[in-house]
Image 1 (cartoon, helix red, strand yellow):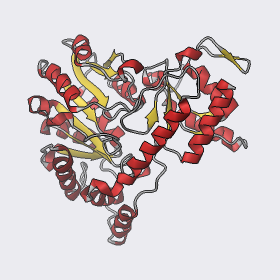
Image 2: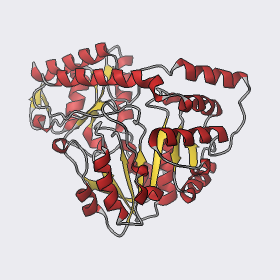
Image 3: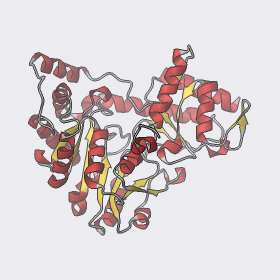
Length: 395
């Protein structure tokens, strides 16, 4: 009998972290690996945010903070949500956590009882499913395809809802596909949600500032369902602050209080210096960090152009985030460099070991016919990586 709890033995390791680890192991052996597996901006945190952190250290911010975050931070988030998203929240409805990941974990643990169903459009971010399972919920999947731009429809949602449905969790823009839902699509989805008063929605908007066309529209703006929309966001992606670990959620007061209660028994408050820096980041005009979005758009176009030379890869044009999610099933059943390719995992391992490029198989996101490419890397690295892939697959 193992000494490790069954719940941990049943949990799958994050595929993105696993592939990054394998890439590091090969690099430690002297192999020049280009890792395009992690979703992490390659920019440094902007200087004006770092300056705020230094000032906080010098002003001796070093003590425990309120569990849900400094009052000034909650106020800054409330103003940001009003300014950028037209969402009205009192600071008491906001909980700051150690990253948006913890915010979603808090929600799952606070709202899902054993046997409750949680709807996950496919592809989904790798951790959604494991969070639901840890909360003893039952994941229910809405399948999407590259042909539909990896976006679920209102009718698909209607068909998936049962009397046990508790939550719908999805990201917009989406990790891993880069799909973006526009206002008309979200209003159609909201019309379905409105008919099911027991269904809440987690709208994960962590990639809000990395949207390439049009203005971001938050699901919580729709009056008919706004009390049942839990908006999650953070600083990691749009402000290049992954290691600062600062995320937040805004929800109905009862939900926020439940999440804060849970957090009080797990991590307590997030890092105090990160909170002070986040106040400055969120008060800034979004144009201050738009250069990152512009660079990601350029890299997206570069990688899409390179993909044209790789046979059998079917792409859609992602509208946000920094990922490509090609359908690669044309390669299944083929043999390359003496290796049989049964699925996307085999293809990713082939490309890691033969092309020395680290990618993530789509099965981790519920889409076994696809793989994820993160283009949060320099243009030079992206060109080199795509050329290596082409050399292995196209000769």
